[in-house]
Length: 212
Ligand SMILES: CC(C)(COP(=O)(O)OP(=O)(O)OC[C@H]1O[C@@H](n2cnc3c(N)ncnc32)[C@H](O)[C@@H]1OP(=O)(O)O)[C@@H](O)C(=O)NCCC(=O)NCCS
Image 1 (cartoon, rainbow, N blue to C red):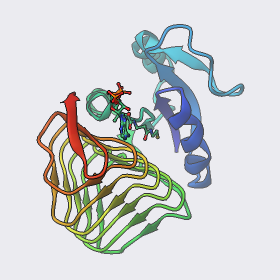
Image 2: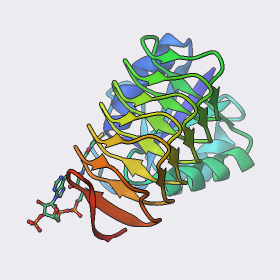
Image 3: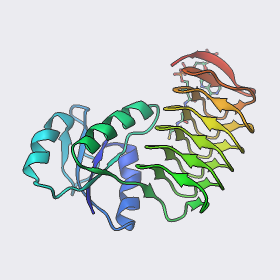
Image 4: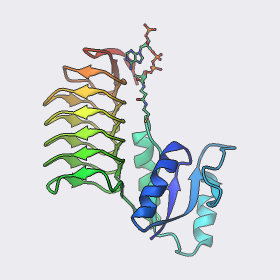
């Protein structure tokens, strides 16, 4: 399938080989940042404001999209996905061949699952979730739409991650805890209690430092 990326920085660079290995082809990249250095020499980069005219001119060649925008912008990812879907593009999941995903896990549309990630039995991922390099999402965890699990982070069993929340690199969340919507768990934190929505926690044990 020919597809576009929305987001032209690191996440796009990491996801391109993943979608190509799946047999998809990247034909354009869009980003709302002005004067962004193009991430690829062989694929055109457009400003987001050029999308409507580009989309009309390409006459149905592009069939799918991947919103390659990482932390802490889960809600932006969801908003852009809704817009592109309403215009007829299909959300594509990009799943690295080395990721291990239990057969009983449910993976929502537009998932980006990186190298070495593990998604265990009966885990449920909503739409537009990212599970980054070597992150572990253990049994029966729930990731609401737009949640992101950072590189090497560990969600132990039955953890619930709210909409748009971000668990940063190397953090650990103990069993059955709830991370509120739009919360951020800082790199390396160990979460021992529920985290309220829109709260940033850091440290071991994790403590709140500010709101998002
Ligand atoms: C949690 C985080 C988002 C907070 O960012 P911030 O709000 O800009 O925080 P600041 O850098 O202003 O730091 C505020 C305080 O918290 C401390 N702090 C920040 N992040 C921390 C962390 N991960 N662990 C422990 N303490 C941390 C700072 O040392 C500072 O303490 P001080 O006030 O005593 O000096 C950020 O520090 C973080 O952990 N980012 C994760 C990066 C990552 O994993 N990226 C993955 C890319 S795929």
